[in-house]
Image 1: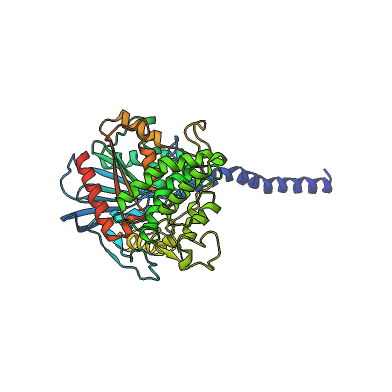
Image 2: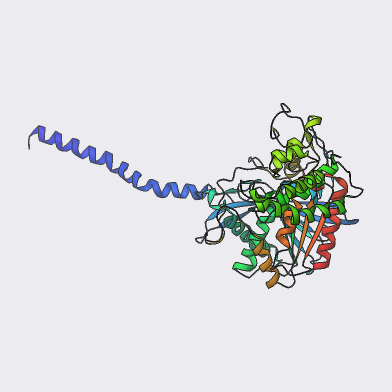
Length: 507
């Protein structure tokens, strides 16, 4: 063999030896990455602390658990970490002690509002119907917490609070009416397993979209699997039928369901031509007008006779405090967004959407709608500060994650069930009526603020009194505030007392 041939063979051998390990490494890379991805998911992060407080006039020692529960797929791999805060009364286990699962709305809102504003053992103290300004915000004991009558679990759905998707799971797989309800129902089952509470009286409750979630959740707990019976559903600022309240051209119901709210707000700000002596009888008049002459006039459209139009316009001015000239220009149809700006235009202020007692100062007074909602920006920062302070310092929960008060959980899938029974405008009220008919021990508690346009009280009444709802199984309670009625101290105490009585009656 020539020297040149030997040299070529030697080079070829060296090249093969050099590349063989490289090929082997590339072949081994995928499983190495997969193992690394699995190892990147640590054990659930939790903190357990002991506390004492006085709630409902009773001294209570309790254990707080702030932390994650992992949802898993069919292969046992974690898909999401659901953050929750549980408050459990210490002492001998009482088989009759209820457990109440609570969450907020959005969709995309953490449970901070009900947690730090209404029912947690601590709450943030803010001035009622005023901008709370800059920090610090007082975090005080909450004697109106429900811990004297029920253990409490505050749940943050995926994309809110400290909750998040895990591994390669797409968080969007949790973003939808049905998907969200399935994840919360799975969490509840896991919590009942871990805490040995399957036979405890059970309550679920939510605020705003949280009431929509409650209806969809009942469908998962009792309708789909029939394995978790619920004693009571607590609805706070209820929205069940999105079609009735949709601000879209041609939807006459939006004007009907918001008219009594306009009457309440106009009375509160003393803008009515004849100020009523008492609010409730006046609102009963507004309800009757909305159900009768007003909806009749709207349905007649361009065929509405001039005489009838004039009579309806005059009554509309009586209830809303708006001028007949403005109402005529609006074709007897005033959307809430226009009402916020028009009601107090002569005073140079607009009113809030979530709570119309709050006043805003816009860039100018000529616009058709307000610049922003003063009832939201007036309180948002205080709640965010409170939950971060209490969770991290009071409950000892350590995390680098930011608490998501309002998260971008979109696009939200509004289809129900298999996609054939709901498209653009969702109505989940039938889920609740079906649950009531099939669970004779279940009752519904409905709480509404008079000055709330996000979820008008008349809209909730219309949803919960339709055919299919058994008589006497739904309680209606009203408060002299807005969407988050508990920002008013008197209404927090009333709300707590009302729900406490509801739970005790249902045990």
